[in-house]
Length: 154
Image (cartoon, rainbow, N blue to C red; front, side, top):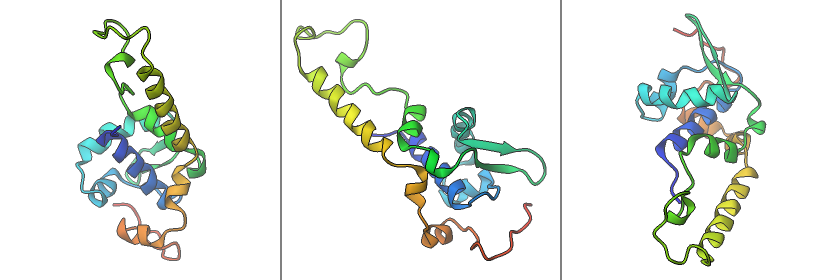
């Protein structure tokens, strides 16, 4: 199974905000840190806001921040939110399937079990687990150290 770019960048947005710990983050800065377009990042942001993972603050000095603690955002939930489907084989689709074995095939059962195992492992990890106390990540994302004063948003 391969996760989409949307899922990859949704996780990156959440990691950035978690690493920025309570400070407001700007999509412009997140996009630059991840070498992605702002438009693509805005597209990904909407489902995260609707799910309460991200909250927005409007205004001149506005931005985004986590809508709940990083330790409360499971990777499984992010993946389920951002992936369009989990069709691993044609027989996962409802409706017409051109397989003569569909009624007695064990492949579908095995793939469903594998998918649930994949999602169960993701459920064991949170955004908080991914960022930890990682000063390298803060530097790589261009975020100030906690001891530095917070610069006013421009």
